[in-house]
Length: 532
Image (cartoon, rainbow, N blue to C red; front, top):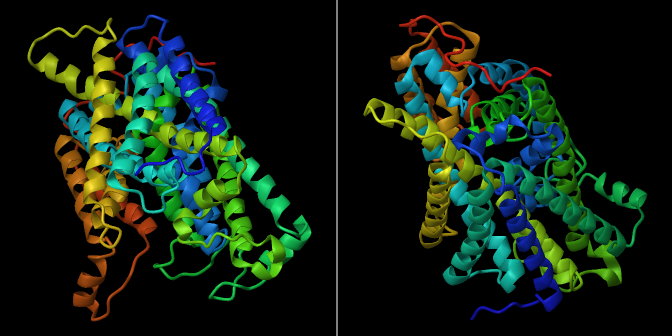
């Protein structure tokens, strides 16, 4: 039976106010008439600070909302070191990728691939993006429903009906304002959502500091103690291990983190789309750098929450009479459990709004980016090949595409509900990591296009295929098998190495091809990309 366990009228009012605000913003910005390109690019008129906030909201998800605290609760702060590579990546994207994309003058970044390698390559790369983003964002929506069910229904083991209801609530509101206002609505609602998320996490830190009977200095002293299995403290930020199976080492941060940043911001239109809405390439670049700085702060706050929750739940010797009475059932739910059981009425609603904001901040951008790629990279070229005229002055096709992509994401998330098995979750693990399959080949293709004058349509297809195959061979359930056959001893490889290896091999394949037509830097007149 579905019940709102600790969800009172005040909490419900806070959540409904959040939903109403998101829908109002979406429909308010929709009053401005626009054509298809304006619907997807907002006439390249968005302020840089809003683009930066929206970028952070898109990068943030419920995986960060719940997974960030879990990482530091169980381990240390080495996850934060991945941002070292992230900073290297954003500077490359800001000053190499973004100016080229603006000069191309196309609706999506995959239009640049058309200019370099031809329309078939553009369609292939776009299809790779659409498939990867559908599976990854659909699975992300499903996993967002799990902690939402904990807060909404007080259920640590939610039923299928509860999960489906949570998915429908998250999806319906996100689709509503995204269909109405396009990328403009996405950016403004994202900006509001990241503020709500940061408010929720700062409130959590304040409450935990109030509940823990130690000052900040005492808390730091406790966390400095060598409590981890390898003798390190929970405040360790850099792991200098050379073991390739360790996920958060300095080397995975510098190499894997850089490649992941290049792929996320430079070849994934889900992230890159909002860069194209800024008033100029310079402002887009500055907003990306600002977003990376803010992202580090947000991730650090979630990791701090996990450290404080470690003392709160795992150190009764410190908590004394203030120790929590609710037993910790699963570290994956440690933060939602705290929010549910230790917040007063009204604050639970704020926490729920923060959870919804984290979920919808990644959902709305995904469906808008997928719709823009489906329309401009697939629908328009197919219509041209058939000799039909495309009406770009209307936004009806883009709105239908957004609605369709949103429904597809919801359907995949619901399908995941019925296929999910907590003991055998390989399907969803694949879905969550599927962007690594797409990223490897796509990053190799974009690096070839941006850094060389080589490559052609055939090697683009080959590079995409090599990326998929390489990533498949590096999976945790496959890599040890063939290394056992080759060396007599199974080896393990952290997932952050998959992308660098796959992208390198894809680049080698793509760059091997000779260009079959003159290199064209821009095939379209640049009307909107004004230099500031």
